[in-house]
Amino acid sequence: MTAQYRKITISLPGNLLDYADHRARQARLSRSQVISEALTAAQAQEQTRLAAEGYRFYAGEASEFAEVSAGAEALRVSEGDADGREAWWWRKAAFN
View 1 (spheres, one colour):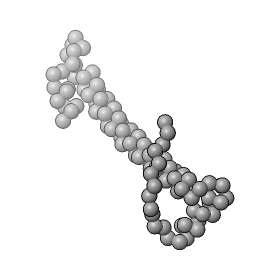
View 2 (view 1 turned 30 degrees about the vertical axis):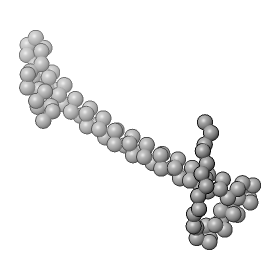
View 3 (view 1 turned 90 degrees about the horizontal axis):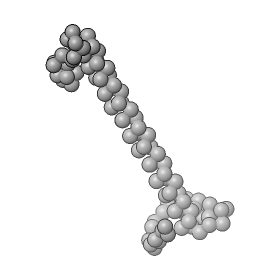
View 4 (view 1 turned 90 degrees about the vertical axis):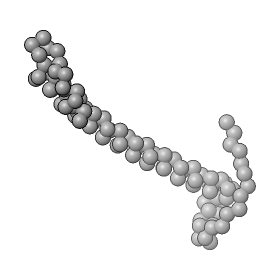
């Protein structure tokens, strides 16, 4: 898939423009390519951060679910009737 390019005008502090020009000469790229690469790297870093944040959130959710499930199973086993059927109230106790 080919990227669509658009021309824009931006203002940068002099030191950042000097750095972009230096990097462009060093890497034999255009100033636009240097800025594009910097933004691409920033975007990838943000996506990585958001993914890690999501993994941490869902890991916590899974942990809480496992805790509730284990508690519910323990209640079911310890309070089941003689036939091994679960007590009707275990669901209420486990999810409240």
